[in-house]
Length: 461
Image 1 (cartoon, rainbow, N blue to C red):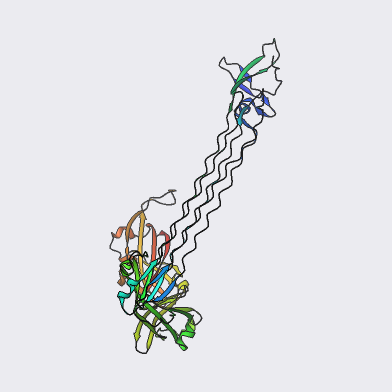
Image 2 (image 1 turned 90 degrees about the vertical axis):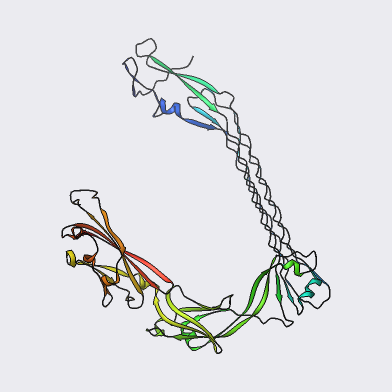
């Protein structure tokens, strides 16, 4: 026979209308105790992840002069190694199920299987450069330059079985009061034991990607190509006093490479054929209104691009408007305008002036770049008939949203005045005393660079 528990009793109203106390155990009510679930045993740990497979080595590049004699090249990349399988999860430690307990039980869970290792990437096939005088002589050259196969991903490890319950359900009786007295009450609570889960199967590792086939590079001459130097960087002060030399070999992409070679050759279908060379000194022609000394420490990168044109890239701190020109004497970069990027968005709200048709908004250019960049303003006007002093959430309605026409913007000494009173809207929306919100977005640009900055105002017109 089970012992009655002498416990502190919170009250519980039974169906008969009698207020009884619900027993507590160590400061917790029996309802909380009955809903508690405790683990017995120790969960299994997850298995280790499989190591990734080693990437295959790429084939070496080669160069040959086509002179009519047979030649054979094997330049294929190696295959990637397979990834290791994930390790099987570790078994849980199963213990004898506790008996005669006043709570639910959970048996220990099995360990998850480890993830499979990634397969190694296949190596790329090596490129072959052929110098030739007669294209037909390429038929005497055999090339095998396949990309290596990707390695197979490892299999995921197996999860292990969870522990099992010896007893699935049981009941415990709890009594309060004094036996034989009217205050003596007993209640029975049912408990259960849940089997541990089987550990999850580990995910398989991804297969490695196959390497690319090697590419053919054709040069219709016998003399080796000169090395090229297509890119140079220097400070603007250096460019202005010391021209730099650039050069680039130019190539054109064509298809049908395997038809040009001996039967059975396997390379990438597209190939590159030499079309000429661009070289020359790069000079800087500073035509910007502000002196170069203000920007002398900033970097400029000049590059002959793959199509043979000249391009310039300035440091991230600068916006620049420039043009390029090629001539017999060299390459020239002409600078028309330069501004500092951080100063472009240093606009500030300057308040409103006037009322009704004379209403103007003032925007101040703290960066002082307005004379050197293009500036447009997008205006969004919202008004409300609610009084924000009486309404926690006044309802605003958009009455205008568009780019302000240039004739409604006046610039004077880095101070913009926007003629908002001349907006093409009903005059009642600009009536003095109206509560309004303005979003004024400055759209600033120079050449291909652009930025936006939004200023917000809310108040009574």
